[in-house]
Image (cartoon, rainbow, N blue to C red; front, side):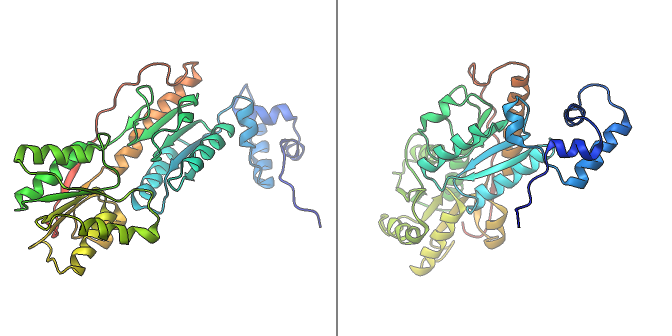
Length: 336
């Protein structure tokens, strides 16, 4: 038995009793057509369950109404929620998304970038965590990053991470912490949450304590490495600012195992405030990112590029204006 083939434009024309040109004009809303003709074509499309070949449309210079979204993995609550919010925001404009999980691997992110470009998506939103992929600088299509500064010409949508770091650290000191530590995925000048933490301790005359567990650490090793990082801290550390909520949850588990009473003896603040973690740990003190606003802002900036390109203006042809940093807020819980 032969496999059922997908219906073609010719099949639609035959069923509707019109020419291929007429079907094309209906699909692309070009030229004058009677309502009767439009209805016949629409009925044929519905009967055949015809779907336009998006790649073929792209090759002819037409919009695919598809946006590529690259994230490390939607298994992480922040990126899963972000991808869902991006999808919702794009759906309001008639666009669909292709979600690519890079799993934190540069080679996979590179392959997905090539895939999206070859499929002629209308644009790309990237929240990947590989900072130095040169391929991004060769992309000649609308491109926006989230929380990832690639180039002065590529818009980067982000919350005010440095203010978040300051707010978390100031809160711990106000609650009586004398030696708060930072637990993060990578340390350095690009880590603005760390910059906020260090700025507050510098003013307070307190020496920072920074420990890292790399973002790309396999799940099978993460708990052990997190506990080792916490065990290596000076004994007078009495609080931890964790730069994501899953890490904050691991800190709470470590404190329980070590007999450190939270918040009486040990205080914990996280970062992100995703819906999933808020349901699991409603009492966690954390810095809330405006995830829905990040998604909407990224979509608005990307679609501005898409529309400009349709007018013949190439993306990334000049320095991109820096979007305003989206505000964070402290959610005060019972862990600090």
